[in-house]
Image (cartoon, rainbow, N blue to C red; front, side, top):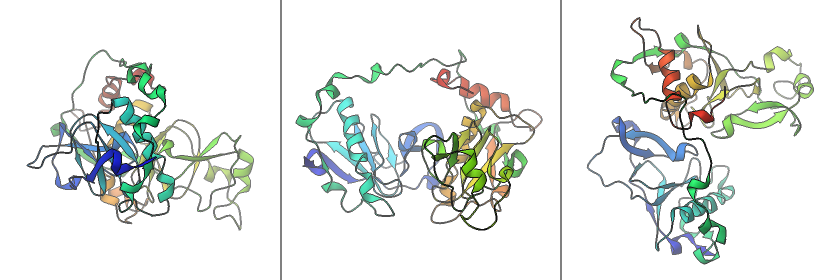
Length: 333
């Protein structure tokens, strides 16, 4: 085992604020302290600052602590994102392995404990100790279907989009539990919590346990209809990992730190949901530093959407755009 800084040169990233950057299509990736989307929270116009180098790892020092991603391209980064560049020649597969190894130390930094001061001293295997299979695999070995559903490419032209209040687009519901019911490994009903990963699922439960549980763990119970939410909606965290949005294809129960959103005047599907989730998550920076996105605030929030000539959200374009992307054949509604 060796210290991280014996194998990598480690330094603090360029430390920009996404809100102060101009977001554009096909811009330079902006990496922040999140645990999804390879850390990318947007694409921005180049500025007079040298970006972080390609063939490096980004490591979150706080927030989603020790979320680690490999980048084979140049990128900007936000607050508390560290960069690790190998001191010796490493393949892409070896870099991916190291990203996995580093991130598996994140349990040491739970409950608000940051990794900023101790990051460089994390112990990781020396390159000579990496299992032989790492050098034998290839990223191309993963047999995901790269083809899109639509055999054409659609472009985004946001100049023609319009802003809508959330309550014009969504029926905004309140979550339920302050204290979630007892877990059941064999349960089939997911519990959606205020998390940034695993589609929001933090545990599974059975219907009987949910029916017998109460909002706070004590006192009078509520009707089962208040606890079970219908599928085909988007859940958005209003506390904790604020602003993370996930499509829910099956019925679920959830914490009061989650807002279930149901489309008005349109049936939601997975393709439209992915389009909307991406836009919702781009706004999460507005709710940092303890500012909660409760149902009382969400109705007046704004979302910018593509429109038809009648200033109506262009749902068909949203669906077709996602279907035009690579890997869309992997999606199931």
